[in-house]
Amino acid sequence: MNTPASSERSHQTKGLLRLTMACNERCPFCNVPVEDYPRPTPPDEEIEAQLQAFLDSGQQTMTISGGEPTLLRRKLLALIARARQAGVPFVELQTNAILIDPAYAAELAEAGLTSAFVSLLSHRADHHDTLAGLPGAYPRCLAGIDALLAVGVRVTLNPVIARLSQEGVAAYIDFVAERLPGVRSVSLSAVQPHGRAAANPELLPDYPRLSASVRLARARARAHGIELLNPYCGLPLCVGWEDGLDSCVEAVEAELGGWQERPGIENAGDKRQGDPCRGCALRTRCGGAWHAVWDQGPDGGLSAPLRVRPPWLEGAAAWPGQCVDRAPEAGEWTVWRRCPAPLEPLDALWAGPWTDLAIELEGASLDPQGRPDRALLSWMRRLDRANQGLGDTRRRRLWLRLSEDSPVRAARVLSLCRALGVHAVQLVGPVADHGRALAALVPGILWSEDSGDA
Ligand SMILES: C[S@@+](CC[C@H](N)C(=O)[O-])C[C@H]1O[C@@H](n2cnc3c(N)ncnc32)[C@H](O)[C@@H]1O
Ligand code: SF4
Image (cartoon, rainbow, N blue to C red; front, side, top):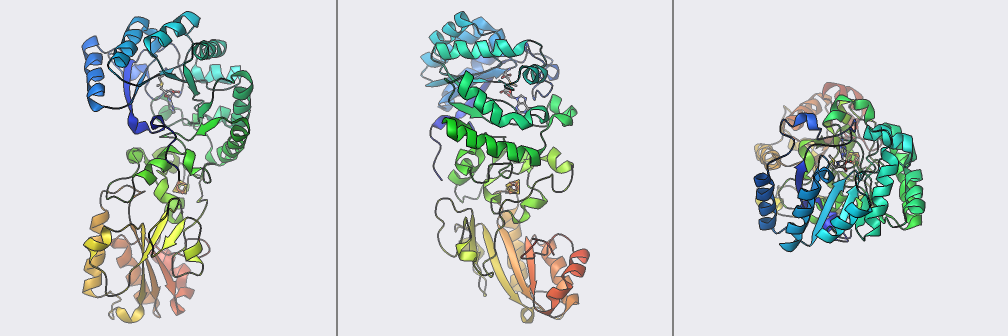
């Protein structure tokens, strides 16, 4: 995988400063609505302190947002100028653009604004105005974009796809290519279930339908030479991005993070992986979906675009995106280590570059109660503990292949494995015929080659 083309592509390089929470639009999906802020505009000293903190951080891109920052013209211009004079190379403005006429755009450029991130919410006037909560917003937004481009400010568009607009993503890209040829990049975000959108879940796009739209839009963007990004806090990879990881900020970040023992994607607090992610080959590159998506049902309408293949199965070493018992190369997401008995010291093992560990356990190594020996049990406990606190993308998974004759002993092993955080167990031998009954008895841990679950 390539690294991002510019440092601006990583959200981690962007310091966000909210000049005011007041706004001249009423987007029904707004994640930071003014009504949540008893004091919408912070005093000057607070803005000054935030600017100083940003300067001290040494970050490259300062993003000014809100609310709508263009409402405070004088303060906004002064803030941009101060940041640039202090050596900040990039200052970006997040705006709905409806106040920006040629004179205002010229002042912004003169102050040193380098780029703008504009919420053009749809290529259709009716959809844009509905999503902006303001009749007549559409032509004003387009005029604002024209004015910014005319003074040399780079513009990225943010459509914030909602259920209302989800079928029109490709048409949006075609519109941009024709009507706004000066725009070279679109950040394809979708409504997040926060702020006002938390109370309006019908605004959230329907992911299975959106997948098809995203794939189409990506093809149109390629044809027009427009950069289309899946931004931080954007879409799960299975929503149309499964073969475009280089353009997905979270996936790039996860790859750049390497194999260190730290949580991967930082939005893990708002997102998680769910049932379909269990066998997903991309799970080490994907933050999953918002909690609200999984709340709609255990699969959230999502399915893994490609499943992993445990190393004991034929073809595992050549499976797309995975490697077995060797150092990973760029673009490999699943790194299998086979763990032979006697088990390797965990400290040394943990330091190695792997995502998934495979153990093949013979029935003979279990005691009559179906318990693995004490050394293996304590090793599994330590592995489970080492995983505590790691996010979904970085958690290391233990897979077990169990050759067993007795369904009763197999059920005991499955219960024990579940309690010890084992990710999945595949049964082989005579007991495999009892898969369905065992899955009913101990749900959520059995693995089968065909379906992922017994
Ligand atoms: C809160 S707005 C403030 C800047 C400006 N008023 C605007 O509309 O662009 C910052 C960014 O968040 C986006 N946004 C707001 N609510 C969102 C949500 N629920 N899901 C995804 N993006 C959202 C906006 O489209 C905008 O690009
Ligand atoms: S990890 Fe989950 S949400 Fe992400 S691509 Fe795989 S199935 Fe989809």
